[in-house]
Length: 534
Image (cartoon, rainbow, N blue to C red):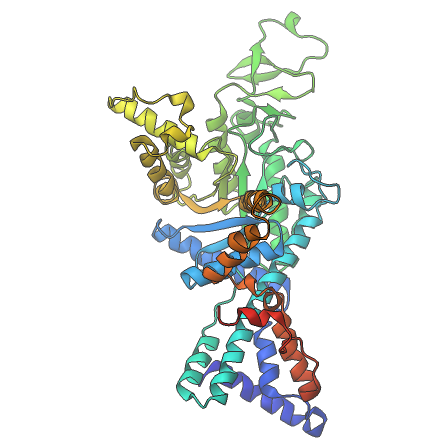
């Protein structure tokens, strides 16, 4: 028997047990409303999506072609439309997630106004956005099911039993728009207790995966900017522990922790790590600090800090800011140590922030990590901070040069020029870009690919195009041809914006509640009717 019909039957028994008191309740309407609200709490969502991520991680371990992807979101509607589009074009949400970017929260959600990615925004805005995203995803479930319920009623009215059976099957096999969100907790917004408290709020809102970075919290910088300062491993591991305790306290025992290292581009440390014996984690961290060898005690000033490296006394190089700098060229070694240490101490996935999208560079680090932790997997930032066109054209140029191929018709420093768009090099570079995620997941252990800031850029681009036309010669045609007509031709649901916002759901609820006396918005004077047959 259909699950939908079983739910109606169970509701009929419940309503019937109340006798005449519940005569105004239609069991099928109640069953429909319950189906449209599958997830009752954020913790329900966190557990459901954690199970999805764990399953996907196992499948990736068995087959690296089964990597996952996501796009960053800064508003619930943006996330909702991504998932609606995914279901529309691919028929399933399998292996597709959402990413919550701290950068976008800072730039677009802070009450202070637009901010750089330096953890200056209100930390409560992060769990608030998680809750908002899931509110919109649940509304997408209600919206799609509402259309199926209306189609079911129409089939019954037409006496079309075959279609009725088909629609009930679609209801039974409905796939929710609720998917995992990998949520950015920056560097933890304070000490380990502050990190724990914020993590709980994020999990309560529905987050099953938290991404935390090894920068110093109060000196946090965007991973693609200069001035990054990392903390000793013991401090970072305390925050990983805080996240795990938060997951365990909230009952999401298989919650996912993504440990991010910014060490590749971070040249500074705020502290010299505590070391109790040669070779421990503290001494390994300190071994990367740049300094001058001290030949005698007389070389030590009253305000100098001195450490021991390879049996020699060394005065670390200290900047006017009080920060210490790492040895040049030590970034990859520090990344490898960071990643191994994080995985051995509670993290589930890694994030290595790089300065360019280069499969060979990533694979070189991951292969070293996998010598110690064989199933190490990455979340990778396919960042808009990279000039993807220039990077891949230069990679092709360099590969061809190494192969001895004639590249004299190309200027490496000017490869971004549109003059190269239709050249052989330009086309090969585009192929490399197109295959980057597949290649990197196969060769460099990348389980999840995300774009942090896609809608920040798409909104700016589409708005620029609309403004240029609308305020210029095109006038209203700029909107009609550039937006609405494309929505119609591409079957974008938002062309019927009243329906997308829930007007038809509300009308149906009014009918459930008030029957024939319901005052509904979807009558003959609703101009949305102009789009019914488009």
